[in-house]
Amino acid sequence: LLQLYAPLNFLGFVYREIKNSLADMEKMFGLMSKGAEIKDKPNAQALQTPSAAITFSHVDFGYEQNRQILQDISFSIPAGKTVAVVGASGAGKSTLSRLLYRFYDVNSGAIEINGVDLRDLTQSSLRAHIGIVPQDTVLFNDTIYYNIAYGKPTASRDEVIEAAKSAHIYDFIMSLPEGFETTVGERGLKLSGGEKQRVAIARTVLKNPPILIFDEATSALDSHTEKAIQAELKAISLNRTTLVVAHRLSTISDADEILVMRDGCIVERGNHRQLLALDGVYAQMWALQLSSE
Ligand code: ATP
Image 1 (spheres, rainbow, N blue to C red):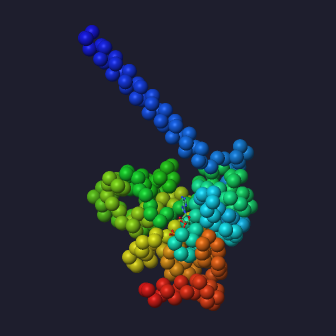
Image 2: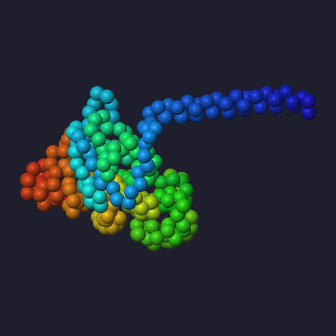
């Protein structure tokens, strides 16, 4: 036993050394990522509202210092209304939604919710008020139940079932041998684009936020699924302040206002009918899309 003591003691030492340096690495990465993060002001207030009006005023923004992406962007989304953004790839559409979620701060100008600058709000309260249905929903390697309940970790099973029903994914889940307990994600059952979006919609329904960001998928779903998802989104955006980043014009023709972006600027704005009458960029995009369909 005594003979074993020295090597075991040495192994213990090595183990502690490795563990400490891993902890240091964790700290280092933590500090590094904290440095890049947006911090709450010491007197930041908590947003608490069931209805949110959003205003972008003269917003300029660039991810890097010497490359401006957004220039003088101004628009408002009255509480409960829908604004859609269209434009070529790289025009800056998704950047608007990233700024609204406050992944970044604007360089100049301001974004306000009910008249309060985002920079004066706590990030956690801001994000609690926003539901995102992203282009490509990333699922956790966990059960489908967990993936939906993530929208509201305190939800009851009945609430999760209701959310799945309103996102029209309940029947699909029940058709799986393990139902809600089916593992999905990279290491589990692979869901189709439409199914993943439905999981994201169910999550959002459960979260019940006053603000909704919908980043439409660039890759088209089949037209039947597309129509169904559109109908579901329309239902959940009702009475919520909604920003839609759209790739297909057919999906946003009933938005309250459509912003047409080019190179980081808004070049046209109005509803579908007004933009067609303008006979400009939007009308051209519309004609192009009709002919390709
Ligand atoms: P798409 O229709 O292809 O999704 P988009 O209009 O949504 O495009 P954005 O994603 O807003 O475009 O990107 C606008 C510009 O900002 C692009 O030129 C892009 O290269 C740049 N950009 C986006 N994200 C970053 C980032 N994290 N760092 C640096 N530049 C970025």
